Length: 63
Image 1: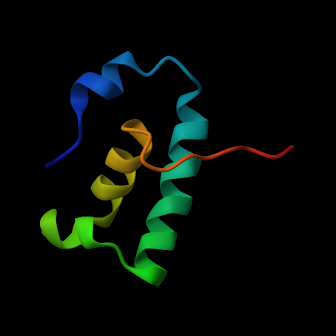
Image 2: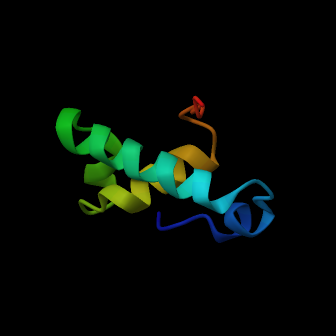
């Protein structure tokens, strides 16, 4: 599993928000671990993108 490019192409929201959510999720994965990282050869950022784009992980931006 690398990045789901078809989902990335269809993403119509703010890319900056997606990037911020991915950075935060990658940090969480680094601190707590995740079984998907091992399946993805240790690629934390790719795993974070995949989890957000497939909606396995929900995020919200507080103003």
